[in-house]
Image (cartoon, rainbow, N blue to C red):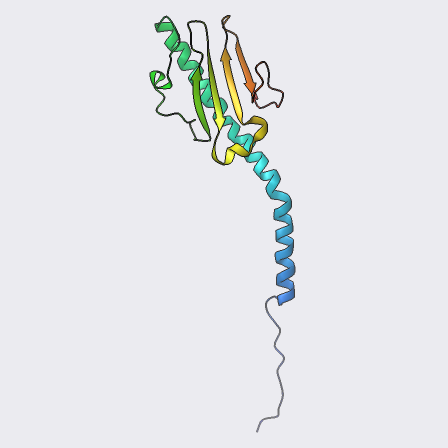
Length: 148
């Protein structure tokens, strides 16, 4: 004989409304966090350009100790390709002479969104002064792309 008693089971889980509210909150937090996270990634990837330019500068100094002028090509310095170590920048060596040269790193791929520091340059002038510049500025780094 059944008594017709119903057992009331506790609901375990989320309702549709709770799930939608949770997803909306996660979306809102991601919308706030992602732009600042991307900016931080861009700043971190600038180190790729700086470290690569410094490595090439040291190689140029070694080369200049052995030859009457600086190396004309990255391949002469033993650099395997035209990209930075991690591949976030393309590299160019120009204006090479016995007194100086210009090394330029230009952002590629996702890093090209880093417009304040899309181009970073290391210039060695006739008096052996090293000048670090960014973008089209020939005499400075107003965007503070360089950290050393």
